Length: 426
Image (cartoon, rainbow, N blue to C red; front, side, top):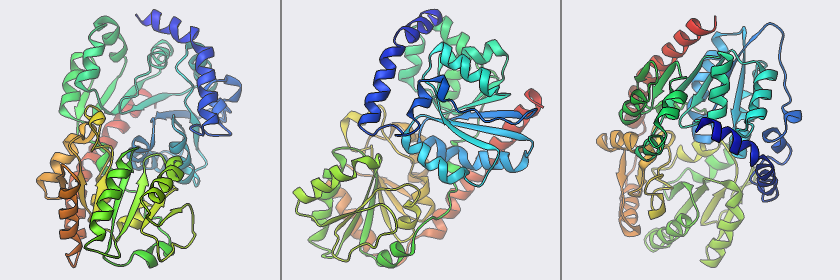
């Protein structure tokens, strides 16, 4: 099966090139750097001589946010290493620009598509000394190449769902051959740990979900603070298509009680901002897309976020946050977005019934009174009305709970990664 995968991915390479070009045309790829994914001539390799390179790969924004604290720790304590960070999505690339701009020994590239000759060329040019994959990024050609080159490879915050495990069990011999290549696995939950152990992964540990240790700085602007330092607003973040309609219906119902209510909408994919503004126009709701430092107009009912890294500024004063990718039936087996950042700012978190990807985290938050599942618009409206009537946020309490949960996960994760590097690289 492994041979078949390698042959098939090579044969469909021309189709994948066309797909990347189409995605570029519809602005789902980096307009300047999309070729990094499909042509080795665009790998843009920068290396110092006689320096070991540690390669981290994370797919998208959520995974990037989870490893930034870990990566910064390693960079600051290992000046003699270089670090390569690869991602897949355009949004993750934009976020990385901000996070690594002050480091000279860190490079960001988009991961080439998992075709054998492209991955082989990538290895040959970058010459990684160790590789860390994040979450569910299982790319067979990449893993096989690491094994062939005897490059130690680990996976952190590993997530293997029941559905995915069953698919791998259709080819058990190949699955065990691929997964046994990992020399360290830090799982995101107990379920994944059990599946990975069955697949012959070595050194499997569970210290908690590293998305708990997200510690991004508050990059908010004064114009945001000046506009939102009052009680009548709430946030809906990481929303997907059709969830905005749900949120606008909630807004209109809230408006009957709180005339000056403001709803902040932060879509998961910011390129949908114009689409959301048209939806607001259809509802006869005054809205404004915020891209940079422009002033938020006084008569706006809905503010649509069209930039990265600014949500902490909105969370600072918000009492309530609805997390998207959770209310629509189609997300039953893949729903949920990371609520930790909002919770750390003392926000009460609301979500729909479909939170599969973060079920363990939400259970912990609900147990501590931080999150609440809602079933429909009226239920969310009732909770938001209650939150708006509270004088003071529970920031200190919520932050303390989150920090206690995250500190041990962070310390244990860093310890095992350093142990791995010491044993396999130094």
